[in-house]
Image (cartoon, rainbow, N blue to C red):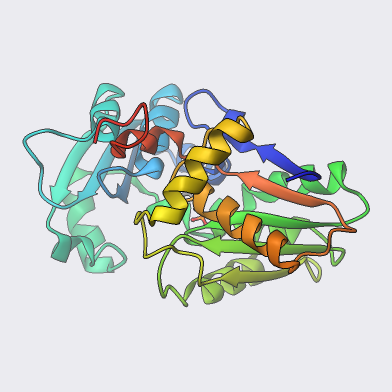
Length: 286
Ligand SMILES: *Cc1c(COP(=O)(O)O)cnc(C)c1O
């Protein structure tokens, strides 16, 4: 993969390696400015977001509450064990209730019970979360002033929105969606970009057909690719986001879909704690 530069966000913070530190930093600042001492947010049992929130929140002196999708299991995931060890109170809700996480009445009921607390949207998906990712775009602009094609894994697209706002028209951003059929991601990006204001921003596009079966699904080619890439490139990856996005980049390069005359940057968004959810990885606990 000669010529592809990798921006290692996974190495940026010891408690929250990856994009979550960027997405959460301004939200934590705002919660403090508003006088909150507790943070409440949402995530699945392997959530990188809750894991980061538990670590960063505790380090900043906040109490944290994690609303977890699905009933508690006899054996909690390694992620939730870490969250609890970092002092996060875990509130399990049924999958049906979890679907109401954006609903104002449901949020009010949670805050009545577990607040007062600053409510942090799932995945940090809001304009402050996107604003926190401006420095990621600026770092790329600084390293590649001549413009670049930038590939970044995408869930909510918050990270991509912040990067696109920071990068000018000389840059093309490709967000590789980890989800199947989440076509609303494009609207979320547009909304966050509009709220950030500013100039034209980078040219961007979400790729919706590189999910390899769906969120957290691992196809045989993805597994093979990740195992190969970790050895050949010496790059630790997670199957949910970064390996999928790197595989998509690899295929686009092989097909000649990407202009090799311009620099290509791959953004490693972290997520390595989630490797423990995959038994086929050496550090996976299954
Ligand atoms: C959360 C996460 C993403 C998705 O970021 P969005 O801002 O929601 O698009 C990508 N990669 C990793 C490793 C993540 O943990």
